Length: 182
Image (tube, rainbow, N blue to C red; front, top):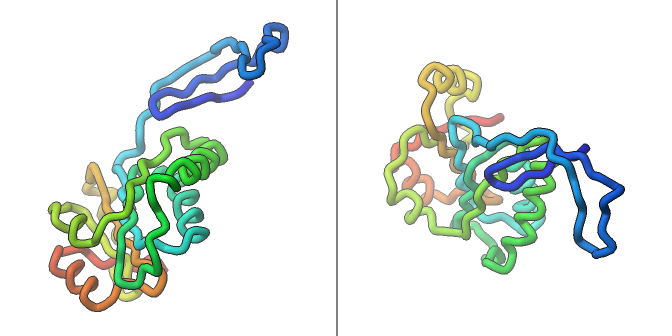
């Protein structure tokens, strides 16, 4: 018995070895149960500075395991180079699917192409946080959010080396709450 899924449905199926075809890519199975997939609430949007390739693959993997809804990479002053293009998306999607399978979290996040910080901040956001060592205590913030039950959260995470001073000013002017993860 295995679980198969796509972005909208998961199905528990039993593979039938007696009906395997002589053709390469055909497998028969009996569907035992199926259910529509729903994303977690609140929707979690991660806005993260574009890191080096391996570090970003780790971010995509971890976000997928945790049930993040959207991963939005951004260009920051400390971004070394733009390596994330349309060509890279299939590989990252495979990494995210593997993470979802591992965690039995069957709704993979949507991965966007990199944008600028100012483009993302152009849209007003509620319940938006920026990770900072001097931010609010995580536990207290989570307790407050549990009471308020917002439909979505947006969390900004800087690139390797963090946001520079001008980017920090942009985040402050956008009224993001500072959140300490440590």
